[in-house]
Length: 106
Image (cartoon, rainbow, N blue to C red; front, side, top):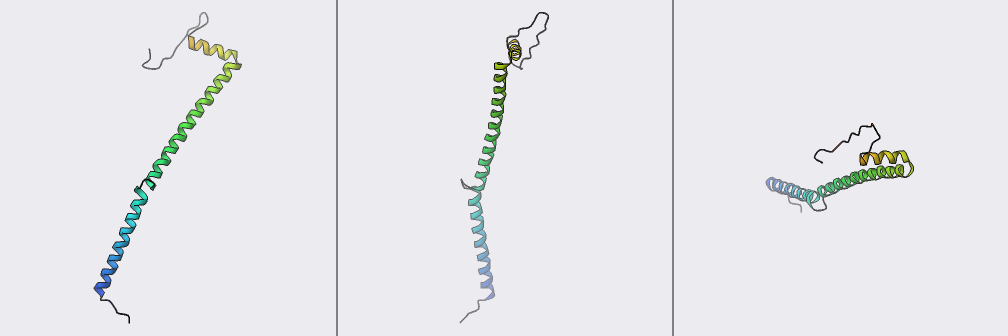
């Protein structure tokens, strides 16, 4: 028949079961967090992806800007004249040329 355990044995069994379950959960959590495919690694990869997306957006904006300059240079002679004068430092008679330089350049 069914035999009743003494109270201290039942208490020890419950304590051991609780400790075992806690250990299993801790090990499972550590594996999920810290392995090479864990949550931390995935978070770092997502940050890298967002960084690359941001950089891609900046490069795309720069390409669009340069395409606009190309379009203006191909179609607008006044814009082309303005750019050539800026680049070469040319001016009309009596005109004062102001050139802005980046710090550290000669």
